[in-house]
Length: 163
Image (cartoon, rainbow, N blue to C red):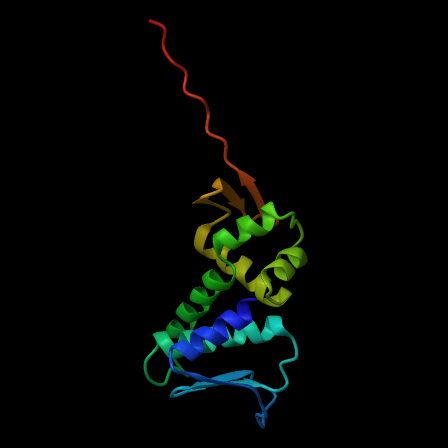
């Protein structure tokens, strides 16, 4: 599972993860301070813990200083976790596994539906209504309007001239 992989990564980087920290405010879902990541005890699903751990791990390894009021840094971190937990490759793999509805993609990828919706909104903003992905499985067109559709791109056969 992705969550266990993220826990292993945190450990390899020398970070301590406290999985059920009793924050005094229910608004705090996760926090990174020095070499410790704390996830709120009120986070009750593995999908939510995965997103929070990935975000805090990204903060711990890729940001510097106090970023509480740095919207650009927060936006970059958010895009990194979108790509890491979902990404174009993940969308293609989920689609080829049979996912068609947003909730199926979210479940297959192991993320909350609200997070998946935020990813789709971000991708529409970043890539427009359509983008492509090429991987070992081939080339795919990903369409984000009106809903997510993933289709293989077939290359036209070249015609040879007989002149």
